Image (cartoon, rainbow, N blue to C red; front, side, top):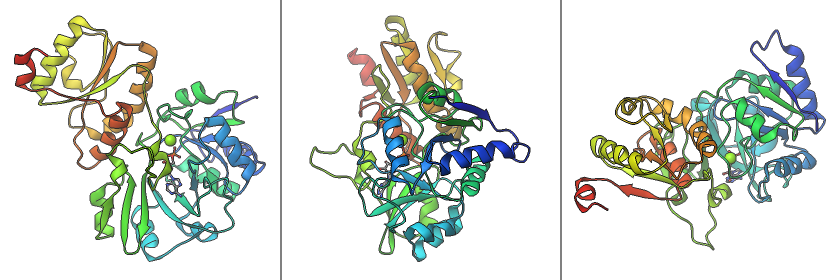
Length: 353
Ligand code: AMP
Ligand code: MG
């Protein structure tokens, strides 16, 4: 398939490119669009054939539903049953990186919702995404634009790696500002259930709704017969080809451990800028200053993708704190590492494990 690759730097001047993307979507084609979270693999959410194409292109299991992107929060009325809490969330966080689960209307086919009576809805703030959705005049189903199981794509370079020749158009809108997928919440009576942490943090949600429960699947490992509220949570995600081990310890101990590991192993290290001088300059993948969690979020998927190209024996990264945006980073990394965490403390060195 021929794929058009178009970089959009000026929406007004590139009106014709926005039109082209919108008409491909209306005609049932697939267009990768930039959003503030990660790139999305877009298709007409009301067209079962488009949704089927999305699942095929991603290699995604068909019971893992798609998020439906709309131009304004009020557009949800056409596709879902809204309520007072939805509008409170919309006032506070839309457009932006929040996805809300609502009961679907018949305007959305089951092919898009993975067979569920509920649907996930989001109103992205990225100006290019907004312009394309508005111009198309249809809701756009857009899961993360990565082959299933690979890290989400946060720049057009990674989209091209996964989808060039497999979609009709790739719209390059630069690097994604957040770099982690949206926060997903489900409304349950007068409370919220957090299904996937993201840039809209637990604290921010708590300011809008007093009761916010955290779904156990965010941290736990599921038993074989368990069904999570968010089907995507049961699938292994973001696993790099080499084993990823998360290090839990104070800065000094972890650095000492990394220095000694570099002597005996080909290890890729997802590290903080402050550690660069002390480590040997090989296979180092910095994600920003230690305190700059926003930078860590923005860079983590690109670094995991780079790891696959380096084929190291092992990959090390710091275990993130679970506070604020850290909860989202922790959730992605703990799954990428298949829950492998190594505790590093003084005992670790004296035992010489
Ligand atoms: P992605 O599009 O790759 O960001 O993944 C979408 C996520 O949204 C997956 O984890 C899905 O399980 C979740 N999702 C989509 N629709 C629903 C729904 N109706 N109920 C619960 N989770 C959903
Ligand atoms: Mg995804």
